[in-house]
Image (cartoon, rainbow, N blue to C red):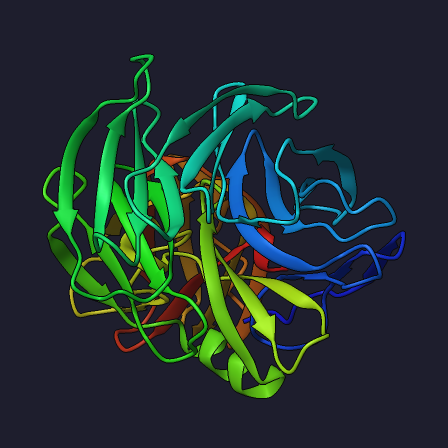
Length: 364
């Protein structure tokens, strides 16, 4: 398996994209400067992270949303929201051209432009302490953590944002909330031990409890951090980590490919091992659904003097590349988003073996 190729980019006083030679995951570090008070919301939309804070700058008038390029760590824009920092702005969700953001105290939800932060409208929230918010593009899901303790599902298209359903929630703790490919994902904030829950968006029922990735648990212990929120970039989940004690930089940590049961890069139960059996050589075929995109295939062979390896019908290796005994070979690949097919035919004496692994380009 490859180690991450790492570098550091500094963006003003507020943002770093850090990569280090550790076998964990990509991370973006959000540094607290004098203009940062608290990171309160996270979403991923239009290819960017949207990070909300409670701004305490020189004028002290507005919370802000920072738009961050996940590939470079560059902050491409900053939006001054219509929410005063004298109230507690909470999580955000981007829907179309709008950002929705609840606040406690006045118990309401603001809808404003994701371009310039201009207020579109403000509407009431039934409860005292809204925290997480998510959307499937048609509905808002708002997690009320105090009174009443429930997830509230509301229709976006109607001017009154009517309540479609209310799902009782017995745990009053604050939680991050995101909607991914037909399901809600919820994580308790300010903790480093609780798993993520996958919820049915029509009933609120807990469908699955998913332990945190071991690499993330190790990072939490190393950094003395707690989890605050999560988002999904189309291929991977990201976690918002609050490092304690304050003031220390927050981090966005990317989960390994396939975590959360959404998709994987290579076969989810790989790497695959193949063995030459008795009889005429025949191809072994593996099919899987992938997140897709660029990456690398790595093949280790032993006791194989010839082989044919195809990926999605294209010959990658063979037949003579393995003729000189045990060796490792690799090549760049681009996997389909969706179905992929690997075919490998080992030749030579029975007992020869080969192992095939796929490395997500985003992990390198």
